[in-house]
Amino acid sequence: MANTIKMRATLSGDVCTVKAIISHPMETGMRKDTKTGKVIPEHFIQEILCEHNGEQIASSNWSGAVSANPFVTFQFTGASKGDLVRLTWADNKGVSDSVETGVK
Amino acid sequence: MTNLKRRILMKNMAVIGATMAVAGTGVLHSSEVHAARPEDAFKAKTVKDALIGLYGHDNTESSDKIKLKLPDIAENGAVVPVTVSTDLENVESIAILADKNVTPLVATFKLEPRTLGYAGIRIKMAKTANVVAVVKANGKLFSTQTEVKVTIGGCGG
Image (cartoon, rainbow over all chains, first blue to last red; front, side, top):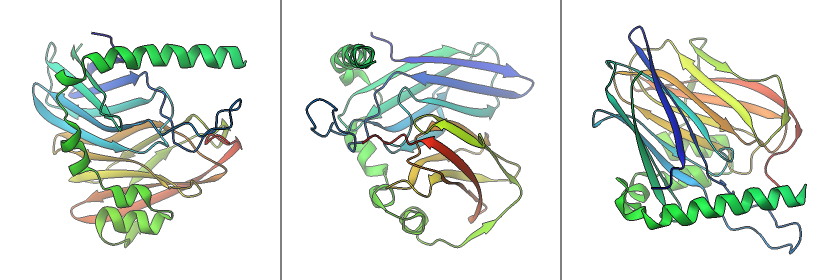
């Protein structure tokens, strides 16, 4: 599985911080190709879902105005070391990917 | 420069191609995604309309319990790091808007009870504008805003 997501979940006290970088072009649909002058069609991540041991902790809807190769972070309580955190994204072309990592 | 951009593009294309192959295994299905997505709010041209699309009204109360961490000057509008954190209790959602973008609504976060009132993301800004964070807590809307100076716009053209 090609991995588009780099994610880390670190525990500090009670708080678990999830940080993730996704490689994605995040085209707004407003940019033009400098050579052909054609509009580059929109292609961006629409939804992000973050789960801890199968239970949803946060979900997010995005527009094309999120930077290319988006970085996102969440914080939640109730995790312990070794728990699984999963992040899933889906874009406007129906592509999606997800990754699971252990809490450190 | 152009060559470099092309290379990055090609690299991205390769990644997308590969993910296409495994798209079926994802947890999310596109119909599910579209059902949950407030399209009207994302297409709105003003902050007011975006808030109406999201929450049905735009009665926000400004609050000093929301902290918005932003650069004063963003040299590159394509990458502006934004961090929202709040001490408010029972936070249900956070929305981030850039008021001079063509469509101001950038991202919405729906948070669960044990998730802290905290979200970080990097956004694109067309020009110098106010970044607005709207937090829904206990059924009420609270907002705060900060101006960010943008030297090079990040929405292409």
